[in-house]
Image (cartoon, rainbow, N blue to C red; front, side, top):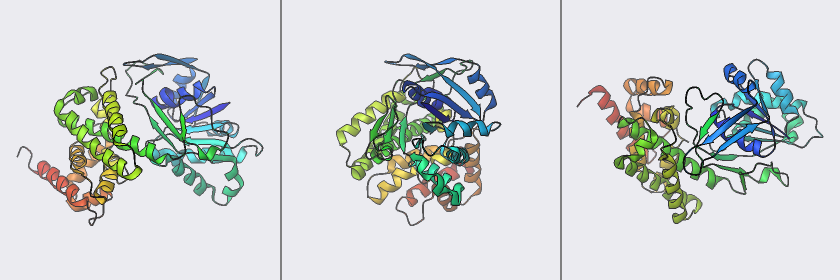
Length: 387
């Protein structure tokens, strides 16, 4: 069995690639970073270090890497004979992955079982996005290749921080992980991925993950940055920040209970697990890494506005989520392009135009006034610092 994985970074090696290796797949990593591809190909094994309570070291073997920027045909040829294709590249990069998969499907022997495609991204319906990109790029040729692949959405969860200098291709991760995959598209032949679980309805899993893990992680980062704290674990050790994060997640849990009928006690236990994970002192994660790309995190379908808008539409509380958005507006990291852009737009744009443009909220939406208020407050602070 063979799996082609797009994105040979820390998530690719330390999570998706590890579980595919456990399933017995020959691993082919595809990436555009020449130095990373070379480093992977210079080794015959790498180690995934799970740090914290219950953590162990795992050795991965049986892999190689291809530079898809310089050797696209090699990637296409691998896809044509692969069993599985996965991604961990970020939702905005899927459109660049699509042509490789499309070309691989065109070369694929129709007699082979359908290629099993899963986008493992922090986004709702990421595999659907990938499939639509492939279909759009195929045009009239889509019908000829459509039956050569099946596409399943997934929900993935594992904290993988920035790696220490000199780690090579080894990866440090947390012990916890979750990989939920839609069962339906595979029929009676799901991929063999030990540790993953297949579900009939993915929506509760992916929204529970995004609106608890991603919302909580970013909330911790933005309040931590606001307090001048560097590490995520140190931020959560601050009782005031911990209380704000807990309040934010109580609001998202109330939404998940209302929308999906999830049990309140189960959600409380899930929140407690998530907060323990964030507080893991052995995990060298920083508020700068977790808080990066604030414009994306403040967009309409993302971890703050997405649940807050849905909660506001149902008359549920949103004050803690809005407070987290206010903290995000203060995220000022010179090394992060979106942070720089965020602060520029706050200085240059009208508050209402900024609110609509960044959050995607219509002025008539019930959440709009509260978000507009925190935008105006941030703009006033920028205009009159120290007041």
